[in-house]
Image (tube, rainbow, N blue to C red; front, side, top):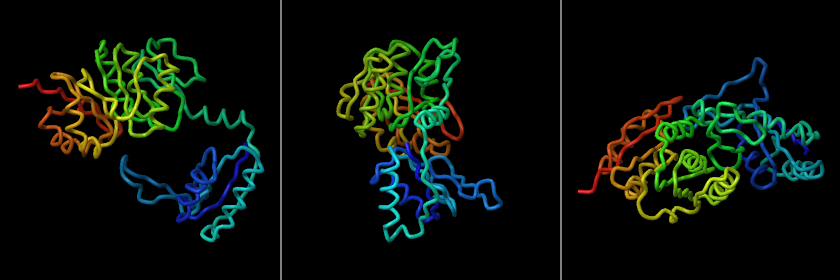
Length: 298
C-alpha cells in the first residue's frame, strides 16, 4: 500500500475526497485537522443526524491509500493537473506496509457488548468468555457494525425479548446485523430487505459468516405479515414508511423503530397513531428507540 498525503483548504475537502474515493480508486480516504496540536487547532461539532456547522477544517490533511506507488503517483498527477485543484498541495507519498495498515484499521474496532452475554465481535478478536450469543461482524460498506447507539438499542431490545419469533422482518437491513441478531436469539423465518444492493450483498455475506438462516433482497421480498418488524433507518423515511411497515405487522405484533433523535419522537408518534401507539423504549446519546404493538383487526 502507498499513502498519498495532501494539504487542502476547507472549500476543497469534499470535492477532493469525492474525487479520490469515487473516481480515482482510493482504498480509503481520511481527513484530519492540519493544524491539530497547534494554537490554530479547531473543533467541529454537530448534533447527531444534522449537518455539522462546517464541513471541514480551514486547513485539512487528506490521506488516501492506493495499491502501490505507481498508482499513487498517477493519481497525484491527475488530481493536481485539474484547474479547480490549484489550491491542493502535495505533502508526501510514502509506503504503508500492508500489515501496519491492517493492524491500524483493526485496532479501531473492538468487541461491542450488547448485554453481558451478547456481543458483536470482529473476526480478528476472541469472543469474551461470558458471551453465549456472538455475532461475527467486520466493518464494511454497509451501515451497522454495532458501534452506533441505534444499532445497540435494537439489539438490546432483541436480547430482552428473545423468543422463537415465527416470522421477522428487518426493513433497511444495512449489514444485516439486526436480522443476524434475531437469528442468534431464536427467530425462525427472517427476511432482511434494503434498497441498496451493497447492503443486500453485505447482509448475505455476514449471514453466511454467522451461519444465520435468512433471506435478503430488495424491499419487494417482504410479503405478508410478520410477528416482529425492525426498522433502523432515520426519522424521515420511517415517517413515510408508516403505512407500509404497519401493513407488515400481524395483529398484536411488535414494531421496533430506531434512527430517531429525541426531539423527533412526537413526529413519529403522529405518523404511526392510526396503526399503533409508539412509546420510547430506550435512550442513548441523544438517540431513541421507539416501540409499539399492532392493533388487533376489528
